[in-house]
Amino acid sequence: MTTHFRPPNLALATIGLSLATFMQVLDTTIANVSLPTIAGNLGVSNNQSTWVITSFAVSMAISLPLTGFLTRRFGEVKLFTACTLLFALTSFMCGVSQSMGMLILFRALQGAVAGPMYPITQSLLIGIYPPAKRGMALALLAMVTVVAPIAGPILGGWITDNYSWPWIFFINVPIGIFASMVVANQLRAKVEKTERPKIDYVGLITLIIGVGALQIVLDKGNDEDWFNSTFIIVTSIVSAIGIAVFLIWELTDKDPIVDLRLFRHRNFTAGTIALVLAYAAFFAIGLLVPLWLQRNLGYTSTWAGFATAPIGVLPVLLTFFVGKYATRVDLRLLASAAFIVMGATCFMRADFFIGIDFYHVAMVQLWQGLGVALFFMPILTILLSDLQQNEIASGSGLATFLRTLGGSFSASITTLLWERRAVAHHEQLAEHITVFDPTAQSALSHLGQGDTQVGAGIVNGMITQQGYQIAFNEVFHMLGWIFLALVLVIWLARPPFTAKAGPASGGH
Image (cartoon, rainbow, N blue to C red):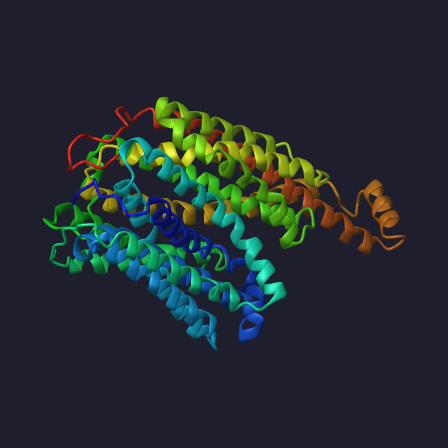
C-alpha cells in the first residue's frame, strides 16, 4: 500500500471524509433528546425507548475492533464507501420504522456499519496528506469529533420540536450518499493490497458475546439498579467469561481478528491509555453538565444545549493553527497543557452553586474548549506515531473502540456516583430536621403557611437539590485530579512523533 497517493482534489476528498464522520459521530447523540417523543409515538415506555441508544452502542462497540480485519479483506476505500452508503440506508429504515422492534433492529445495523467509519477516515486522511500536513488533517478530524456530539442534542431537539422524529434519521440520507460518492470518486485510483485472512471465528464470537454483554451492562446498569438485578448479574458473568476467553485466544492465535500485539508499541500504548482516560473524563463532563442544568437549575433541554455549546467555539477557531504549528513543539507539552486546562475547568465547576447564572456556566464551557482544541490532535498523533502504514486502520479501530468503551464506563460510573453521593448528602443534611425539634417544627409550619406537611415537602425538595449540588461538586473535583494525573501518563510516550521514512511508513 503506497502512502504517496494524492487525490485529484484534496479539499473535496477531505470534505467527503469529514462529512461522513460528522454524520456518524452526530448520530451517537442526536436521538438522545428525542427518546420521549419516539416512545410516545411508538407506544412504549421511556425505559424501553433507551434501547434505541443501547442497540446502536452495542453494535458499534463490536464492529469497531474489527476495522483492521475488514480493511485487510476489502481495502479502506471500498469499506468506507460501503459503510457510508449502508449508514444512509439504515438511517432511512430507522426513519420509516413503524414499531420499536423495527427501530431497534435498524439502529443495531446502523451501529454495526458506523463502527469502521471513524478509524478508516483517520487512516485515509493520514494516507492522502503529506507528512508535513498530517497534523492539519488530524486536527480537522478532532474538531469534528468535538463539535458533532455538541450539535447532536441541539439539532435533534430542534428537528423533533419543529418537524418529526424520523427526520433526525432522514437527514443522513443525502449526506451519506454525497460523502460516499465524493470519496469513491476521489480515491478510486488509490492502489490497495487486499488479502483473504482466515476468519478467526472463536475471536469473533467471543468478541460479540463479551463486548455486547459488557455494553448492555454499562447502558442498563443504572436503570436496573446494578447488582440488585439478576439480569445485570447474569449479563456481567457472561461478559467476563466472553472477554477473558477473547483476550487469551487473541494473544495466542496466529492470525487474530483483533491485533492486540499493537500494544508492543510504546507510543501506541501510552497514547491509547491517555486517550481512553481523558475521553472518559471529557465524556463525564458532557453528560453531567446538561443533566445538572436541567435537574438542578430547571433549564429546558434546548437551553441546556445553548449553555454547553460554547465548548465548540475554540476548537473550531483554533483547528487551523493547531494543525499547522503543533508539530513545531513537543506534542507531549501540548497534551499536558490540554489536560491542565481541562483539569482547571473541572475545579471551577467544583465551586458551582444552585444560584449560578447562565453566563458563568457558558464561560467555563468556553474555556474548556481551549483544552479540547489542544487535546485530540496531539494524542492521536502520538498514538499512531510508531505504527506502520498497514497497522494504522487496526490501531485506530482498536484505540477508538477502547475510547468508546471508556465513554460507556464513564457514563455509568458518573451517573451512579452522582446519584449515590446525592442520596448520602441528603441523609446528612436531613438528619437534623426532626418533628421533635421545636425550631424545626416552627420553621416547617411557617414555610407551609401553617401546614407542617407542606413545609416538610418544600424543605425536602431544597435538601434534595442541595444534595445533588454537593455531589456534582465532588464529582468535578475528582475529574480535575484525573486530568492532572494524565499529564504524567502522556510523558511515557517518547519522540519522534513524525512520519517514519520509507513507503511502508505512515504513522505520524
